[in-house]
Amino acid sequence: MKKFENFCKALDNLRLVRNLNEPYDVLTLTGSAALFEICFEQAWKAMKGILQEHGYGEGQIGSPKQILKLAYSAGMIQDEEKWLAMLVSRNDVTHSYNEEIALALVRRVKEEYIDLLDALKVELEARWL
Image 1 (cartoon, rainbow, N blue to C red):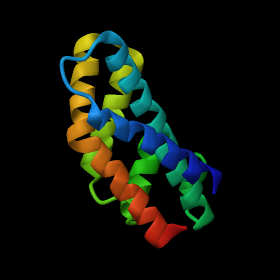
Image 2 (spheres, rainbow, N blue to C red):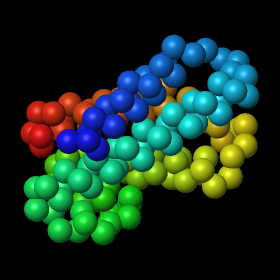
Image 3 (cartoon, rainbow, N blue to C red):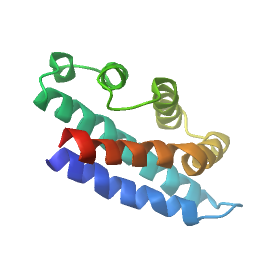
């Protein structure tokens, strides 16, 4: 499935953020934030496509928030609150970029978000594809 492949490629790129160390320059912060945005977009779109393939009708027209809630209820993701927090982080960096927001995001990506995205990849490969 192309959407899953796109997600996997984006996740591979995002994992590179773990190799970065503070202090970050502006290009590193901006690039890391962009990698996160791309990976998150690919993740929820992959979830949407896979849910559709498995007959979940709401997956056809859902917003990212609706897709995350549906993915949680279907057992695709394990921690709805953390995924919704990731959506908020994506929205924050997309709609009002500043250095403080980007720095907080990069820290969360390294500490938490990559692990959530990795868990999604494992789950999709094991039970959904």
